[in-house]
Length: 108
Ligand code: HEM
Image 1: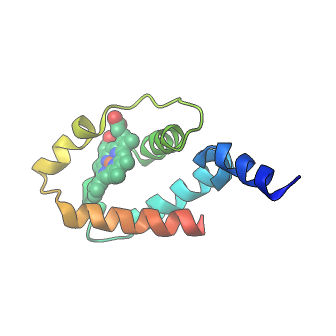
Image 2 (image 1 turned 90 degrees about the vertical axis):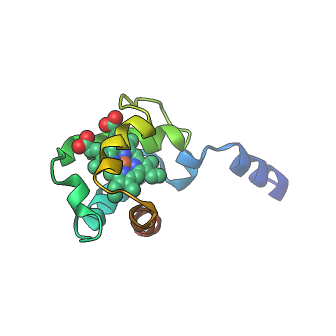
Image 3 (image 1 turned 90 degrees about the horizontal axis):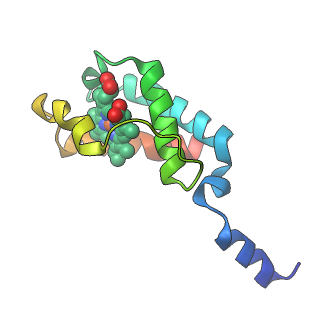
């Protein structure tokens, strides 16, 4: 295969495939929530959450947004987080979550 074909093959793959598919998403999301639940800045938002369900929904959500199979059955983002805004959710919490997501995707 030539270099050009290699590049074309890479470009036509979804992000989901390129990061390693189901195994990579599962490992990253598990690691992501371990980091989130260990972070005092944000873990209170998950006090009343069923984390097994949340982890399953997040795996389905990322799988969908990364271009994998669409099995996401949760709500839209604004509705899902409206109750958290009432609890004081702001940009600092979003940044903390993004920090954990970034490292989890690299490490997971
Ligand atoms: C890009 C950023 C984010 C994405 C993609 C995301 C994704 C999701 C998804 C897919 C759900 C499930 C929705 C449903 O059940 O209908 C959810 C729920 C939730 N998210 Fe997020 N989220 C993000 C940011 C945050 C932040 C910043 C926090 C708080 C620090 C947070 C806390 C929660 C909580 C507590 C729930 C509800 C869990 C429950 O049902 O008890 N999320 N999020």
